[in-house]
Image (tube, rainbow, N blue to C red; front, side):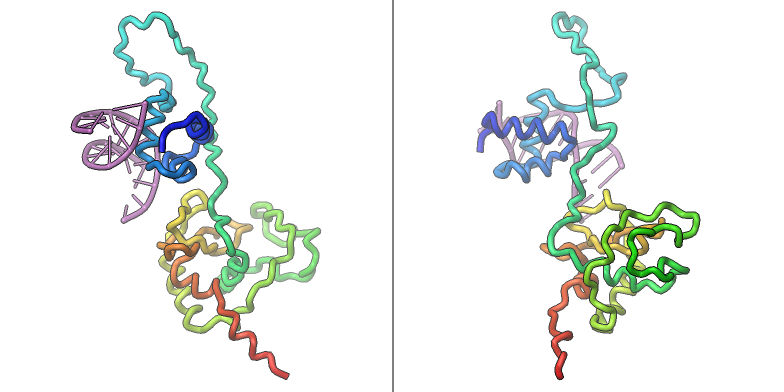
Length: 216
DNA sequence: CCCTGATTCGC
DNA sequence: GCGAATCAGG
């Protein structure tokens, strides 16, 4: 692969967006992050934010004042959207509610009225939008006891990562109540190709066999 | 361990 | 110019 205009353009764009070299390399394909970094430098796109430490032993740099005209949107760290939205992660949040140690979430009446969400919660943070009334979630009863036990155990060792700390190799299983501070992601090593660690894969992906005993 | 960017240096 | 290897740091 060579650095065609298009590829360079993509590189510039993504770099400006704050994408990491590895992400850019993946996007472009055919190059490693090293190649990307090397190119970035040759293009003179390297960052170096804090203006002061610009150790330029350049004694005589005539033409080319290079003013502070470097609007770096990085301070705000837009950071591409979280990669959490991997794929079929739909039914995930389900078991997350299997957590017992919870005072009084929203178990109060009005179970079907997303119109008036907050109110119930103590003077905490505002509840998240939560427009939809919880997607189909497998009742805890459908999950094998083993898997559940395993999850309980694992969640004690969870790394408690924040959204931004998740990568393609960390378990993205949510734990706790998103509406409060008691919320984080498992973060343990995920199974290659899967968004969760072994324990959470166990409760996330059901062979949908245990529910077919519906006979009558 | 995973990741990040920075630099070097043979090609 | 290119980018693997290496370095330095989180």
